Length: 262
Picture 1 (spheres, rainbow, N blue to C red):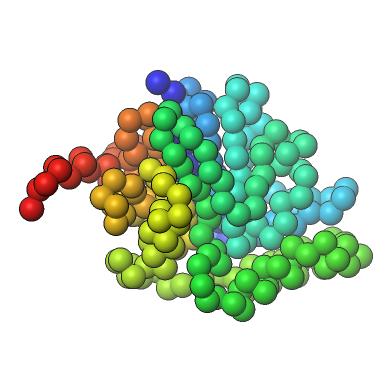
Picture 2: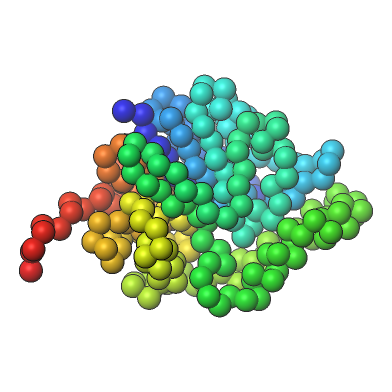
Protein backbone atom coordinates (compact mmCIF):
# COMPACT_ATOMS: atom_id res chain seq x y z
CA UNK A 1 0.00 0.00 0.00
CA UNK A 2 1.30 3.46 -0.91
CA UNK A 3 2.19 5.71 2.02
CA UNK A 4 1.19 9.21 3.14
CA UNK A 5 3.98 11.51 4.33
CA UNK A 6 4.04 14.60 6.56
CA UNK A 7 6.75 17.09 7.51
CA UNK A 8 6.80 20.62 8.91
CA UNK A 9 9.00 23.48 10.11
CA UNK A 10 11.83 23.04 7.63
CA UNK A 11 12.42 26.82 7.54
CA UNK A 12 14.35 26.88 4.27
CA UNK A 13 16.33 30.12 4.05
CA UNK A 14 16.90 30.56 7.78
CA UNK A 15 20.41 29.20 8.27
CA UNK A 16 23.84 29.73 6.73
CA UNK A 17 24.45 28.50 3.19
CA UNK A 18 26.40 25.36 4.17
CA UNK A 19 23.61 24.15 6.44
CA UNK A 20 20.92 25.12 3.94
CA UNK A 21 22.65 23.16 1.17
CA UNK A 22 22.82 20.04 3.33
CA UNK A 23 19.18 20.50 4.31
CA UNK A 24 18.09 20.73 0.67
CA UNK A 25 20.15 17.63 -0.20
CA UNK A 26 18.41 15.68 2.56
CA UNK A 27 15.00 16.96 1.48
CA UNK A 28 15.60 15.93 -2.15
CA UNK A 29 16.46 12.43 -0.95
CA UNK A 30 13.22 12.27 1.04
CA UNK A 31 11.14 13.57 -1.88
CA UNK A 32 12.67 10.94 -4.15
CA UNK A 33 11.68 8.29 -1.59
CA UNK A 34 8.15 9.73 -1.48
CA UNK A 35 8.02 9.54 -5.27
CA UNK A 36 8.79 5.81 -5.10
CA UNK A 37 6.76 4.80 -2.03
CA UNK A 38 4.14 7.48 -1.47
CA UNK A 39 0.81 8.63 -2.80
CA UNK A 40 0.35 11.87 -0.87
CA UNK A 41 2.48 14.48 0.89
CA UNK A 42 1.34 17.05 3.43
CA UNK A 43 3.73 19.93 4.11
CA UNK A 44 2.41 21.05 7.48
CA UNK A 45 3.55 24.68 7.54
CA UNK A 46 6.69 26.80 7.89
CA UNK A 47 8.44 24.99 5.07
CA UNK A 48 10.06 28.30 4.09
CA UNK A 49 11.27 30.75 6.70
CA UNK A 50 9.18 33.39 4.96
CA UNK A 51 7.25 33.69 1.73
CA UNK A 52 5.39 36.60 0.18
CA UNK A 53 4.81 36.92 -3.54
CA UNK A 54 3.85 39.69 -5.93
CA UNK A 55 1.75 39.32 -9.06
CA UNK A 56 4.83 38.88 -11.26
CA UNK A 57 7.64 38.41 -8.72
CA UNK A 58 8.48 35.74 -6.13
CA UNK A 59 11.44 35.63 -3.69
CA UNK A 60 14.62 34.19 -5.15
CA UNK A 61 16.12 30.87 -4.06
CA UNK A 62 14.77 27.41 -3.27
CA UNK A 63 15.04 26.36 -6.93
CA UNK A 64 16.13 22.76 -6.32
CA UNK A 65 13.37 22.21 -3.78
CA UNK A 66 10.71 23.70 -6.04
CA UNK A 67 11.91 21.63 -9.00
CA UNK A 68 11.70 18.48 -6.87
CA UNK A 69 8.14 19.35 -5.81
CA UNK A 70 7.19 19.87 -9.45
CA UNK A 71 8.70 16.48 -10.33
CA UNK A 72 6.81 14.84 -7.47
CA UNK A 73 3.48 16.24 -8.67
CA UNK A 74 4.25 15.13 -12.24
CA UNK A 75 4.81 11.59 -10.89
CA UNK A 76 1.22 11.61 -9.64
CA UNK A 77 1.85 12.40 -5.97
CA UNK A 78 -0.71 14.78 -4.45
CA UNK A 79 1.08 17.54 -2.51
CA UNK A 80 -0.73 19.79 -0.03
CA UNK A 81 0.94 22.82 1.57
CA UNK A 82 -0.75 24.05 4.77
CA UNK A 83 0.26 27.59 5.65
CA UNK A 84 2.09 28.20 8.92
CA UNK A 85 2.95 31.36 10.83
CA UNK A 86 5.97 31.98 8.55
CA UNK A 87 4.01 31.31 5.35
CA UNK A 88 2.49 34.78 5.41
CA UNK A 89 0.82 34.61 2.02
CA UNK A 90 1.32 31.66 -0.31
CA UNK A 91 -0.47 33.33 -3.22
CA UNK A 92 -0.87 31.36 -6.46
CA UNK A 93 2.68 30.36 -7.36
CA UNK A 94 2.61 26.93 -5.73
CA UNK A 95 -0.82 26.07 -7.13
CA UNK A 96 -0.34 27.45 -10.63
CA UNK A 97 3.34 26.76 -11.30
CA UNK A 98 4.05 23.62 -9.24
CA UNK A 99 0.65 21.95 -8.92
CA UNK A 100 0.88 22.07 -5.12
CA UNK A 101 -2.42 22.65 -3.32
CA UNK A 102 -2.17 25.47 -0.76
CA UNK A 103 -4.50 25.77 2.21
CA UNK A 104 -4.96 28.00 5.25
CA UNK A 105 -6.25 26.52 8.52
CA UNK A 106 -7.18 22.92 9.23
CA UNK A 107 -7.41 20.18 6.59
CA UNK A 108 -9.58 17.16 7.33
CA UNK A 109 -9.48 14.04 5.18
CA UNK A 110 -10.06 10.30 5.36
CA UNK A 111 -6.99 8.34 4.24
CA UNK A 112 -7.06 4.54 4.05
CA UNK A 113 -10.10 4.46 6.32
CA UNK A 114 -8.55 6.71 9.01
CA UNK A 115 -9.72 10.26 9.75
CA UNK A 116 -7.00 12.92 9.81
CA UNK A 117 -7.12 16.43 11.27
CA UNK A 118 -4.08 18.30 9.93
CA UNK A 119 -3.08 21.83 10.93
CA UNK A 120 0.15 23.77 11.42
CA UNK A 121 -0.87 24.74 14.96
CA UNK A 122 -0.30 28.49 15.18
CA UNK A 123 -2.97 30.57 16.90
CA UNK A 124 -5.35 27.72 17.75
CA UNK A 125 -7.56 27.57 20.83
CA UNK A 126 -8.28 30.42 23.25
CA UNK A 127 -5.76 33.15 23.96
CA UNK A 128 -2.81 34.21 21.80
CA UNK A 129 -4.88 37.23 20.77
CA UNK A 130 -1.94 39.37 19.69
CA UNK A 131 -0.69 36.81 17.19
CA UNK A 132 -4.20 36.19 15.82
CA UNK A 133 -4.57 39.93 15.13
CA UNK A 134 -1.13 39.99 13.51
CA UNK A 135 -1.97 36.99 11.30
CA UNK A 136 -5.27 38.52 10.18
CA UNK A 137 -3.55 41.80 9.37
CA UNK A 138 -0.81 40.15 7.30
CA UNK A 139 -3.29 38.13 5.22
CA UNK A 140 -5.91 40.87 4.86
CA UNK A 141 -6.66 41.60 1.20
CA UNK A 142 -6.47 45.38 1.69
CA UNK A 143 -3.08 45.14 3.41
CA UNK A 144 -1.82 42.76 0.72
CA UNK A 145 -2.82 45.25 -2.00
CA UNK A 146 -1.04 48.06 -0.12
CA UNK A 147 2.03 45.88 0.42
CA UNK A 148 2.40 45.28 -3.32
CA UNK A 149 3.14 48.96 -3.85
CA UNK A 150 6.50 48.35 -2.16
CA UNK A 151 9.50 47.59 -4.33
CA UNK A 152 10.03 43.78 -4.06
CA UNK A 153 13.40 44.26 -2.34
CA UNK A 154 11.73 46.35 0.36
CA UNK A 155 8.69 44.09 0.58
CA UNK A 156 10.71 40.91 1.01
CA UNK A 157 12.82 42.72 3.60
CA UNK A 158 9.64 43.51 5.54
CA UNK A 159 8.64 39.84 5.40
CA UNK A 160 12.07 38.81 6.66
CA UNK A 161 11.67 41.18 9.61
CA UNK A 162 8.16 39.93 10.39
CA UNK A 163 9.43 36.35 10.21
CA UNK A 164 11.96 37.13 12.93
CA UNK A 165 9.18 38.62 15.08
CA UNK A 166 7.07 35.50 14.56
CA UNK A 167 9.99 33.28 15.60
CA UNK A 168 10.47 35.26 18.83
CA UNK A 169 6.76 34.88 19.56
CA UNK A 170 6.64 31.10 19.09
CA UNK A 171 6.63 29.20 22.34
CA UNK A 172 9.89 27.95 23.77
CA UNK A 173 10.82 24.43 22.73
CA UNK A 174 9.61 22.88 25.99
CA UNK A 175 7.29 19.89 26.26
CA UNK A 176 4.40 20.66 28.63
CA UNK A 177 2.92 17.15 28.44
CA UNK A 178 -0.87 17.02 28.75
CA UNK A 179 -0.90 20.80 29.29
CA UNK A 180 0.68 21.39 25.88
CA UNK A 181 -1.64 23.85 24.14
CA UNK A 182 -1.87 21.83 20.93
CA UNK A 183 -2.64 18.63 22.85
CA UNK A 184 -5.36 20.47 24.81
CA UNK A 185 -6.76 21.78 21.53
CA UNK A 186 -6.66 18.32 19.93
CA UNK A 187 -8.61 16.81 22.84
CA UNK A 188 -11.18 19.62 22.61
CA UNK A 189 -11.63 19.09 18.86
CA UNK A 190 -11.93 15.36 19.44
CA UNK A 191 -15.00 15.97 21.60
CA UNK A 192 -16.66 17.85 18.72
CA UNK A 193 -15.85 15.41 15.93
CA UNK A 194 -13.98 12.08 16.09
CA UNK A 195 -10.69 11.61 14.24
CA UNK A 196 -7.86 9.10 14.40
CA UNK A 197 -4.86 11.40 13.99
CA UNK A 198 -4.24 15.04 14.83
CA UNK A 199 -1.14 15.97 12.80
CA UNK A 200 0.61 19.29 13.40
CA UNK A 201 3.93 21.13 13.61
CA UNK A 202 4.76 24.60 14.96
CA UNK A 203 6.18 23.58 18.34
CA UNK A 204 9.41 22.04 16.97
CA UNK A 205 8.94 19.07 19.31
CA UNK A 206 8.62 15.69 17.59
CA UNK A 207 5.97 13.72 19.46
CA UNK A 208 3.53 10.81 19.15
CA UNK A 209 1.00 10.96 21.99
CA UNK A 210 -2.22 9.05 22.69
CA UNK A 211 -5.18 11.39 23.25
CA UNK A 212 -7.77 11.17 26.00
CA UNK A 213 -10.15 8.84 24.21
CA UNK A 214 -7.43 6.16 24.26
CA UNK A 215 -7.65 5.55 20.51
CA UNK A 216 -6.63 8.74 18.70
CA UNK A 217 -3.12 10.17 18.42
CA UNK A 218 -1.48 13.58 18.50
CA UNK A 219 1.38 13.63 15.98
CA UNK A 220 3.86 16.51 15.89
CA UNK A 221 6.18 16.28 12.89
CA UNK A 222 9.06 18.09 14.62
CA UNK A 223 11.50 20.42 12.85
CA UNK A 224 14.41 20.44 10.40
CA UNK A 225 16.25 23.11 12.40
CA UNK A 226 19.01 21.40 14.37
CA UNK A 227 20.63 18.03 14.13
CA UNK A 228 17.65 15.67 13.82
CA UNK A 229 15.25 16.43 10.93
CA UNK A 230 12.12 14.28 11.20
CA UNK A 231 9.01 13.34 9.26
CA UNK A 232 5.86 11.30 9.83
CA UNK A 233 4.59 8.50 7.60
CA UNK A 234 1.31 6.60 7.59
CA UNK A 235 1.46 3.23 5.83
CA UNK A 236 -2.29 2.59 5.85
CA UNK A 237 -2.14 0.77 9.16
CA UNK A 238 -0.06 2.79 11.62
CA UNK A 239 1.74 6.08 12.05
CA UNK A 240 5.50 6.37 12.55
CA UNK A 241 7.83 9.27 13.21
CA UNK A 242 11.13 8.85 11.39
CA UNK A 243 14.63 10.32 11.38
CA UNK A 244 15.11 11.84 7.93
CA UNK A 245 18.88 11.24 7.79
CA UNK A 246 18.74 7.50 8.49
CA UNK A 247 15.07 6.55 8.01
CA UNK A 248 15.22 4.95 11.46
CA UNK A 249 11.98 4.81 13.43
CA UNK A 250 11.95 7.40 16.21
CA UNK A 251 8.42 6.74 17.51
CA UNK A 252 5.94 4.08 16.42
CA UNK A 253 2.25 3.97 17.17
CA UNK A 254 1.77 1.93 20.36
CA UNK A 255 -0.80 -0.86 20.39
CA UNK A 256 -4.32 -0.03 21.51
CA UNK A 257 -4.90 -0.54 25.23
CA UNK A 258 -6.76 -3.72 26.16
CA UNK A 259 -10.45 -3.24 26.86
CA UNK A 260 -11.02 -3.39 30.61
CA UNK A 261 -7.29 -3.29 31.40
CA UNK A 262 -6.40 -1.76 34.75
